[in-house]
Length: 507
Ligand SMILES: [Zn+2]
Image 1 (tube, rainbow, N blue to C red):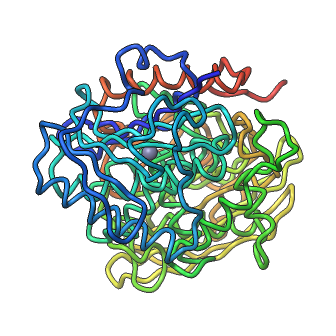
Image 2: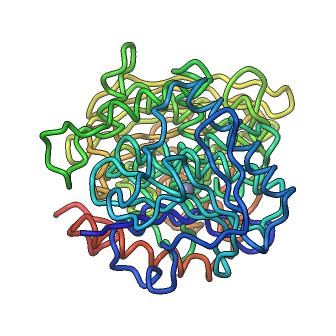
């Protein structure tokens, strides 16, 4: 059976990094096939690398300069991802291999410079239905040269991924492809357009994607923004050269005798097999690390790259001076979902130091942990502390005047990288330790959401520093609809019985 996979790098609206449609099409069920997405374009000449088995096919609309740029970028990607990080080479597309009706002339990896339909910047097309697949790449010559060079690293990573495990999760495919863009071009910042969907949804499982969490038609970039998590893994637990991503990819490969439709093991299993990695502790550490991106960035902790406000972590805004210590159950909007965190952010008034106690217990007896970060934005320093991991946890934190607290209550229970998101509410109590229990009770009732505990800042749902995230959210509806359509292909292909965005806990 011919089965072709398209990985689409979709050109977004102006100023938006083109997200990639990814694994949306792993069979021919999508209408995109009928408009030629999976066909090899015509060329007017070819250029081969003298260093690696790579061939660039120049279409009539592309210039020789563009072909040379792409060939150089491909050689650079090979040097970084294969020679440097040790990834496996792409599979040869020998004639008629796995359903391809053409091999592009030989077994080299073929990269076509040829116009694509509007809204599509690049594609990686894979052949066959196996767990490992040959590929070819199509890049649109209308793409600006700087974006073209970055896109090569993204699509090249997809070609290598398909040589290892075509069944791996969409999040792992896209997060590591975007992370390679950043490794190859640390100066690039356009990928930050993809980060808000990830940073604005810390309650989501870290392993999920925009099809299974949130509304893909609104912002389909969660799995691309998860490059921030991939970069954390490489920076904090790896050597900073992408070799950890390679190990996790190779560790996620299906055994030859396994179910070809299965994705076991997955990248999360491989992460748990890494020496010196304890996944729950790692996720709790990441909760604090990601809080130090963007406007709360400091020296010596958090992301090493300079990230702007697009990388701000979102959370439920709280008035620290108004904390009354009443226990309440977190809402589905706050989370946490399993392997996600419920984030609460507040700043102490200039004239008041506030000692805070945070207590959380899982309604469903899940494993919880609390990460607290206190940030001095002026001095650019932060202190990070984590609680123990248990079904009921507590932590005390002192927030000096003018400093900002980011408290993340995380569900650290085990999950599979292909699980549906599972909401796991916690009983949460945020209290000032300098006031007797119940002091000031009733004050502030009716403000914000009127939940009778931490006083919510009215009309400021969840932002540490720069306004309503819904305003910040990228307006990429057209793109979202397209990718949303891709999403149905994902679900169909994997026969995932997932018809709801969230699987709420059963009451
Ligand atoms: Zn991609």
